[in-house]
Image (cartoon, rainbow over all chains, first blue to last red; front, top):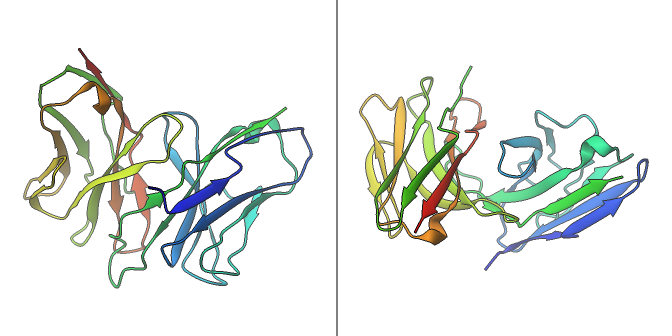
Length: 116
Length: 110
């Protein structure tokens, strides 16, 4: 059912490695988001984008970067993974509303990252 | 500072109606309220969205009083498969921020 895809689903990697988490959506949505979430806990916004060539930092962005070269693709890169990055990373998209941001978010199933 | 507050956990029994309330004291006139459901190892899934009064769809109802300082998600006749974490979200018109609640873990017992 999901029209937003995240890969890999699970990733175990050593400290200091550079990693890129992939996110693609087929709905033509302009807005895309990256959230970090520990299981059953709050969602923390890492980055978001209003469209191609638009990227903004969220509350938790200092150790990662994103790019938005194509509408459907919004990859997240960690330059140097650390154990504190161990978490679930969720990608989401929504339509760009004309007024308030009331367009529902569509989430992928996440990437579970473990840094050893 | 905008904030949404919801109970950490609730439990109920199959066949009962469950109401989960979210407080959002600083909500502004044009802000929307949305509720999401999340199962383990999945992303949150949209349940219902509202602005004022009452909204109903095939799975839930959302009640928003006149002062809009809270909202209540109502799940009729829950089943075991409704066990999940439920998140309240306020979309702020002023700055396009999305303010998430910390989630309510709902456990349905047989």
